[in-house]
Image (cartoon, helix red, strand yellow):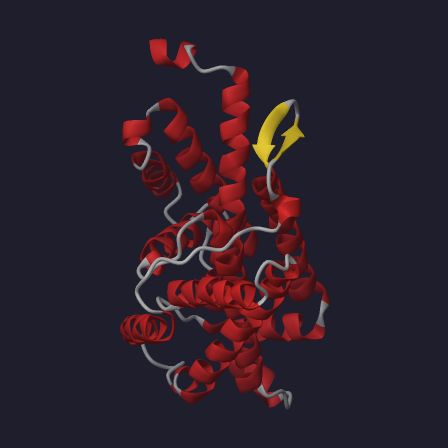
Length: 298
């Protein structure tokens, strides 16, 4: 335990804040997956590919603006909408005809869709690494509780709670959100009331896609964009929604915080075994609470 004594409070706090900022991206992507799981009952394996499309779309948009910093902010809005459009076509043409099928078939179908989307990304953007620069206003560092934190990470710490608040307002305060929740419980009853449940499901799927695209656009300045970046995120997202409670948005937030913080603090404590920490936390949670930390809607 001698190595623990070498860790200063400032180093601990700095790593904790970085972990929380990483957790915000995990939450945004996982919230979209959890929302689709909760309303449509579809375990969408292609969700990670939609996240990847959002990241590459952000690259194209910022590249089109050149050195103009407005490109990044436009990308944060337009990239998720592009992903939503892709998701709408996918949902209307294919997925909407399979809602009554077994979950295993839906998993296999969305897995096949993931492979197709990966090939489409390769055809459009190629196999080379891409990168996105954050605007100058988000460069450098900022002082948080006396600790220097990258300004972009501080930006993510603000965006995450805003997305959580937006999702709560949508599901709890809007008519469409309430209908989506009702349709998730009893689709036939909602249909008897004259509501077009099919389009409610389409809207719910698009919202999940918007969150995937937003997560991809937000992560773009933090890593190199490449084919296969969807594989890790989809595994992490499924683990997060599982330990949080399937279909529970707040569970996705708690799960993302747990996953992101243990991953970050693992790097500080035992860097050579850092990758083990978040998965160990998942195992411990599932051993203690097999249905997740919060109530599952399944």
